Length: 183
Ligand SMILES: [Cu+2]
Image (cartoon, rainbow, N blue to C red; front, side, top):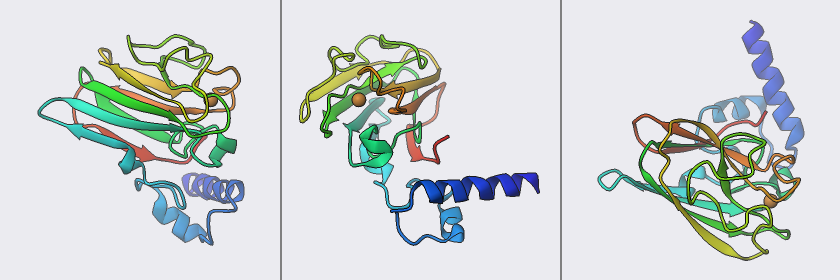
């Protein structure tokens, strides 16, 4: 029962926080739980492609893609809503593209205080300075350690505005991408 109440509170909180995303009922919102896309947001599956035989992953990171989380988002998701899983030792090629009106960057970091990438190559150039609006960069890296990481914008203040996604490096399995309600 406590679980159910908490779930309802979470759903209602989410609806209140996102009033512009269509006439969802709580029941409709509930049906979104556990699916790949949040209602009215981009389908995350379009941002990830992979090749199991080559053990390669292609990830698209659109920084400042629309107004979600006041523009502090990747692919339309801020606040750790976007969850990406990649098996250890696969090569990740990530296209970081600044679609926003301010400078943004893309960097894989090990925690919320880190300002250097967790793996060599896992950041756009000068991530604290960031890319100009419209600029693009390609990241290429091999995550060699399992664990939970962030894909964050390291321009000062942006990660604090919760401009980050969650990247899990798993011991095995297949790459996955999904969205979930933010904290
Ligand atoms: Cu940013």
